[in-house]
Length: 446
Image (spheres, rainbow, N blue to C red):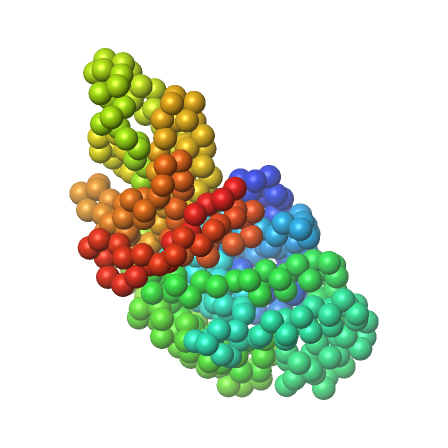
């Protein structure tokens, strides 16, 4: 099999992502590989990974790429790691560069988290989702006791710091994560080569930190694309219980455990082929997606209108609307409605929505106006080209809790923008009118 030359896609924030498009056929597959075995040039020399890729080639066309910070792609900054949203946009950049239309997403280990976000946010861009030893959360929690504690992550990072690249480290790495194969010296040597060529020591530490800080559990129930969750019991980077949990949370997901230490991936492809074969006739259009909603409201508009008079107030509102619309365009927001003197807009990324909200607060202050802004991420419905659903109601209620010139966000938004540089202050728990339960809200403070 001839391996094509490496190409590069440029992301929205200017990062170069190395990728290869391999094979041909009607089925398109995007491989979001495990970061510790991510080098589009070297992976073909690692028999365990190469046999999986050859199996994919026999089934269609796939694109494999090096995630930012790995292989031949641009590195990451130690002091400002990319957000999950940015890493999801890397996948989209590669899909666009490859010219794929609604591919199958295949996510391995922590790469699956990026696939979960993409599938929830852009269901129209994926025909199916397959995961292998998927991770949805990195850090221990009472409802996720199978994942590592802070102490275990610290030990793993120290382990990398002290031994990265040594033969002893490679053997220990294989013993820990692939014990069924660790007794084969040639396997360990090949495994060591791919790991060393995938990450520098500093990038390996950064990758551990990004995995540790990942939590996409709240996205799983929103995924609507057909999903197959596979767990290879002989690859022990992720606990079996995490895969079972993911399969329970994604509506309609199928779960299968791979039991044999199969270097040719026969058991994997038997499930893969069956799953995709039965789904080809079941594809449907979905009208529910994950979106971020933003609501703004001018503070004291009635009093301001009385002070200025009708004509001057109308001109002031027109200036306000012009500035808000310009900022929505800048931050890739979509105006849905203007109710009186406020805006309702949607975004496909929460960090952009929050940045836009901050910019709106500053822009209208120059007009002698103050606004309160609320931001929430959740499932929205599109009916007759109108956006609705519980997430919209929650967004409006969140906005009502903001003080003048204040941006308030829900817990979901805060979690999704972790690592973006945005800072928040706890605004306490609140009852939101017409919405069940109590909601923890946060003020944006930078």
